[in-house]
Length: 573
Image (cartoon, rainbow, N blue to C red; front, side, top):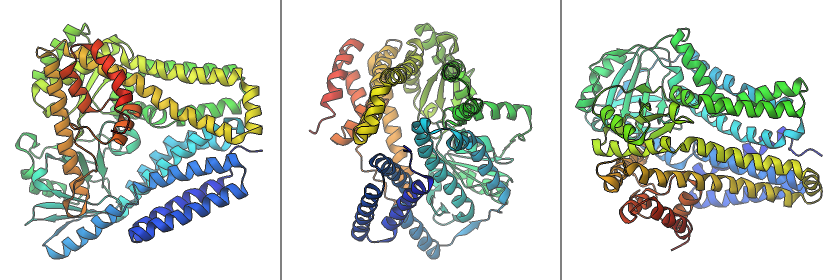
């Protein structure tokens, strides 16, 4: 009996998830809730009556994932925002920013998506049933890919841009991503000679929040707002830049100089394409793995050869991880200036003098350490992070330097490898017992799989949070202000995150509402959010880290407190 349900069944549950999301948007809230309950109950009844239990459970999981994924796209707040903006445009003077539509622009994005996904699609179609678990993962991945493609197509066909001179606002009317930007919040305005496909396509980017509203290969107007950067392709980009740039922060104006985007066939772009393609197909997706695995299966390679291939590829990823992530972020090296000098001082104290420093063009507040060993270590800070006060940037640098000094990137990867290796070993040793369990107690087998799927992220979170808390206290020893400076740096970071999140949410919500339903990063949140952050996230909550730096004298004390609070803070209180 097949473990996987047929393709028609999977497509049907995804379609039902879409219908349920549409119902939740178009019907009144109470009626929508009742309709969704009825649809879900009817679907579950049909699945468990007509299909084997295992397939019914799997289809339920696929449907739940599709419902959650499409709810990010088909959202009541977005519809209300779009209607409110249409009403607003009827009441005020608005000047449309005309964008010429060139179908080749959308075709280029779809082609890149297809290229990156090709290996996974081939594997899904060609691999035998024994690889059902990997096929299920591909199904989940393709749902996410489909949503990104639908959103991009909707932006291309439905987007309309308006400048409101009296209100000094920029309005974006779009099916799924409407926005209302106050121009007083504009941070930067610049012009590109053409769209940089490798920077705009979501598969090829990392550490950046942006919306691509471009509709042609003409000049691009880049506008950076708190928490988000948008890219437009107006017919006269220079004119609109001249009009909007005066609203940008004085320190961030570009002076109208056009940034030259090199053509795809340029050697420098081909090098970017290689590394970004590697990132897209191995980090953001599994197309490279599954594509080559499909070839090995087609060649009827023995099991040991397949296993050796997996191990060698994993080793290669370890070796090139720094290059891949630097390429994915389009990071630029920092080789001079105050931040560079402060970084060199920290690196010398940490015993990692050859660590490289990079800047990533992004409105997000973030820092990242890469490199599996000290000799290949690098630290990347976003341009938003670099705008924080220098002592706070120094604290973030010290935290990331601690990750490199302690080889935390390698630690996290080895922890992942150890878990998967142990799981594979257990499956090999107890294959007959697991086969018997799957044949005779299908529900128990699926529950066992879901338990491991639940435990795996908790295990990774435990390892990651251990290294994060240690990095706070280790990095603090290299700062002149010690734990107080590290705590102040995290406080400045949390305040900036909250401030930009509030503004970003106001750009997306009707009537400028900005509530996220969560407490400030500096405050203790509800028990559910605390549970999720402590048990599943890579970082402990910021409020806890700041409080710990103030109350714990060293890493040993903080470690004991973290082990206790990881459990205590996850309980209702």
